Image (tube, rainbow, N blue to C red):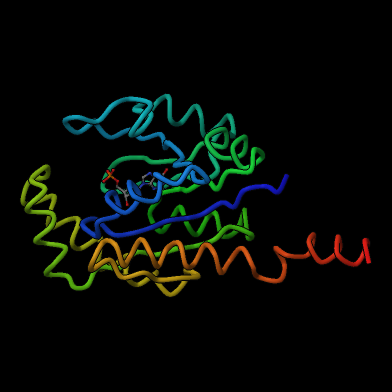
Length: 201
Ligand code: 5GP
């Protein structure tokens, strides 16, 4: 069986990444890796589902144990992708999505050059602010902090393989699946098929 593809999926706060991922995960070929974080759960978030919520001490111990594919500090909290949230599923042939910020993405670029890098961009900054205010889970200071962060993150968009603008949700999700399909038929991923055809000629 073919191994699954590791997909790095990054978007500044307020780009509608969560909603997009909800749609993508309806497709059973995809699995969302559950990250570890030291931040407090938001109302409604469940340990082991949204994140593995752990202490800074525990996080640092896991770094030392080599349990992370990547990790980064973001707005004062640590976040990291666990090896055992990705590799066993890739082996099973599932495409594993890492929903991570840009510093972590650049670490994956180094470690897993065969990963696919997708950046979700907003239609405008005004739209980001509007979506964050509507969500109402952050204080005004945190919203401003996240907007400054978003501006910085947009500067990394060109380091990704694809940039999808999330204006209308259905279009953005359709763009994502178009990217996946195009990637599946790229020559390096078709080499097994070609070998098979030649062998049986
Ligand atoms: P939030 O606190 O809003 O859930 O996430 C804040 C930021 O951390 C988002 O940009 C999200 O993509 C990023 N993030 C979540 N999990 C990870 C992770 O495992 N590694 C890294 N590097 N970033 C993460």
